[in-house]
Picture 1 (tube, one colour):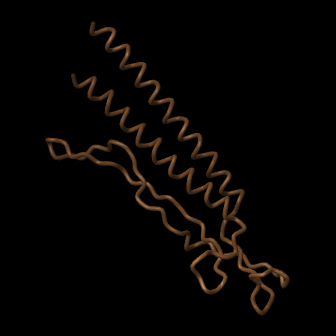
Picture 2: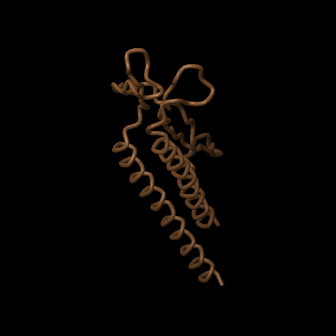
Picture 3: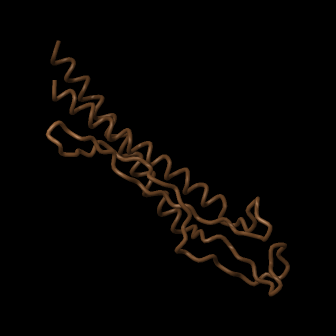
Length: 146
């Protein structure tokens, strides 16, 4: 019985990883889509899009003996990247240029975002493969139990 419980525990862990990576992929694609957005709605002054970052945290379960076991991962927060500065370019003809002719561009580096996207997609695919493996193991266990 504990073997089946462990099997489903592994399945839940890989499922949570899949969901977390999907959220990260969504944020990265939103960053890429807004890499040239110099004016966000709801601001009086031209305010560029600010890159978003995803933070994960473990899903913990307290065991009967008091210890905590990691059962998966979830998105802890999606927050703006406050450490990377906005790029400033000189473009006096741009509608969002200031009095000096400078336009503040989003703090999105497309190369870095693409590298993060590749990593997130690979992690997503790995979690899917793990889920498929757990399903095959469960099917084998059920066949053996018959």
